[in-house]
Length: 131
Image (cartoon, rainbow, N blue to C red):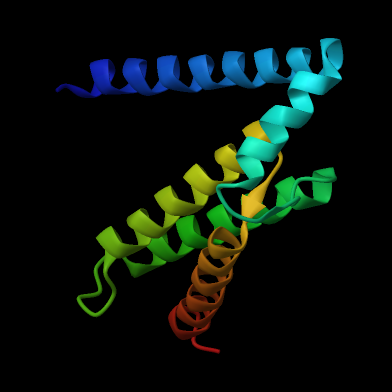
């Protein structure tokens, strides 16, 4: 599949998910009883905790994505640093960010993934910058 088709498909999926989130929000506002039933169903899938409370939370994701991007740029030309691994980390963070933005929740497992990636890239940054 070429890049344009893939990007179009991903954008369509994101729009569809945003529409679904809006529909669920509207359902909750119009019929609180059904919304509480839906919340009971969602809670059966595992514990989640709210992460997107303020703009600061969003900026944390942005800073991590920026850190990974800098590490990708700085690691070019070095054999000991895996650029593909860093791109994979960036994709994971990006996916978790948009999931968190769309549903305003994030699982503890996802938080652990984000924290591991952050610590890893701080160490890589200090190595690349010679600190």
